[in-house]
Image (cartoon, rainbow, N blue to C red):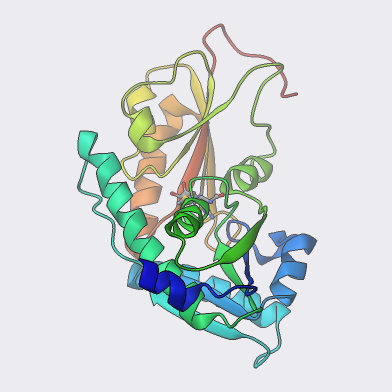
Length: 275
Ligand SMILES: C[S@@+](CC[C@H](N)C(=O)[O-])C[C@H]1O[C@@H](n2cnc3c(N)ncnc32)[C@H](O)[C@@H]1O
């Protein structure tokens, strides 16, 4: 590691990185702060997850086309290592850990080899970098390794959670009540305790179907903010199977899907505006 350190980290050289939240699909949701950061970037790094996600890579390139004239920046694409998604239960965390380390190696090389001294680079992160995204954790790991010196800032983006509730014209929480954001994997283990408003992301298995016998409303959205957007809302008992069908058809048609939903439980009957 010391050899690398000497190769990559020269005294007085500070590479700058912007981690830019670009919103969850609608190019108009790019903030003015994000546009400023885009304009001050020399090198953009795009990590492609393979053919299934190439639409998302194209959306990022389209954003650059709008805000940066061709030839005024460099674009570096790299292949994201595949994560072992089959690993469940106790194996889940180590699988994520290995994957993060593999990515850290790639990020380290990108920053060291593709970013000139005193240049600034940017990672364009889907939605908000603070929500179910590993970029910040990976950059921290790269800094801890100490082989390459850089500073970074974070530009918040409009998350798919904000986009979802705005499209459904509802709030996230009810008056003075908590809201929890979790994953489909967690929801499949049980409805979270102490909370009746739950946002679910990363759900490949439609965990909401387990709760169709309860008094719960769902606000569901897929491809939110893109031309393919689909929105469905209503009592879970009436909509769960419909959503599962619509989801399966859309996934088949496009080859991939990203969906998010809010479950609003009514344990003591209905009523109560959002605050
Ligand atoms: C790896 S997480 C990234 C979340 C992202 N950082 C954010 O702030 O929205 C991917 C998950 O975000 C949600 N998601 C992202 N974009 C979405 C969109 N346009 N429509 C619906 N869900 C979306 C889905 O639940 C998907 O499984």
